[in-house]
Image (tube, rainbow, N blue to C red; front, top):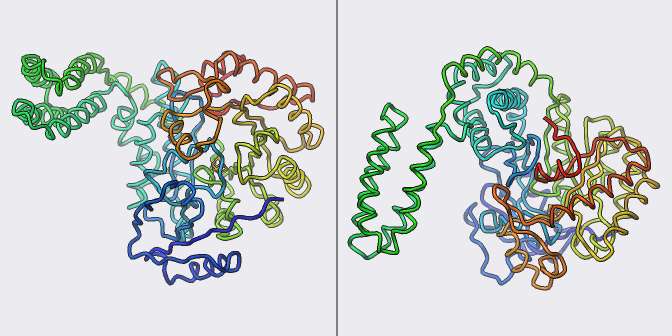
Length: 538
Ligand code: SF4
């Protein structure tokens, strides 16, 4: 069993300082590491440390603070993948473990610390209305699928920001607080909600153009060239027109103002600073041409189906995932936040709690909550992958032991998570041996599904890996050749045929054990599902 996590330093922010829970946390940490450095900051916003490897510093440090905003959010699916709607509860942020490929390392310039939130009990208020918020979001989602010719296979950035806006407003002042108010909320805002996620709606198209023009203006204002500065100033007119376009200004007025600007830019097209703006003005024209608001007739049709979709949404299993931006098990010997969350959830059996972990020391939770509605995804990889790339996590043997304990003591459902598959030497034999071992040792009791996926990384994560793990071979092009992202996907991935081949082999070996379970792909493109003949869930 690996040693438990002990922070080297703790930063206590003013919002947490002096609280009873903070004192408890500090007491536990000092017991774990008597020489821990404790720093009291003057501000809840802590400056990023000027150290060479920020990731190492982050992992060594725990920051105790209060979370200011809401705890619950809808997860935005990255790139062009297939993924169901996931609702995340941020019990803490960042992870004490050290997987080289962890996507959280991407966010290090934005969220620079490993946080323990000392006001987790405030989730109570959000939980009270969460069921109704999820009904609203599911209804909007399924109504939009009804309207759209392309089935939405993931949460788009537009849906994500709509969900976020709804939650933020409802967090400040609950409007969606029971079944009736949830239905009224959708009914009274149907046009706004539907067009909010329709990428070709005039609202979204104008917003897109406006944001681009503002970004150009900011950039051009940094120039010392008088003509460029004059054009930066001229951008005010189309920006204002586009801003007011929703309020009755016609598309012709928008076009005219963009044409006027385009003329001046073309007259000065020899200036290098204007090249990018020139492209944007050209693109703006095609964005305007593609505007396709949901028609009044379609809207009437959607309204007539609203009650049925709402009813169907109330019958979908509602879920909460408290472990997306962290693996909470890694520090729950310090913060007990998972136990606190499970206690809060006693009043909300309508939710399935989803856990996902590579550090499943589940004894406490299983003992106290054996019959809670839980689906735990336990992540498996061959020992070579765990040792080399999943630093600080449980070994394969420990993960298997944890699953056996869950099977023996609880009725939690278990998902076998096998991702990311990494093409180590002899990977086919390694994954073959892994599936046989899992099936022989844990069998199929309580297994509700199998999820497999392979290594993927966005361009920024690739450079982060290089920066934080200079000796890794994970991004070595000779060892692990990957294809560049193909739009609209945003990830580097192994070749499609290599992925399809290993997925089929892994699924076939599970099949040898009569594992007729639901098989899904983790963070994969829809073409990868098609390649292996898996039906995308609707
Ligand atoms: S266990 Fe999960 S969250 Fe933690 S470092 Fe590994 S990939 Fe990231």
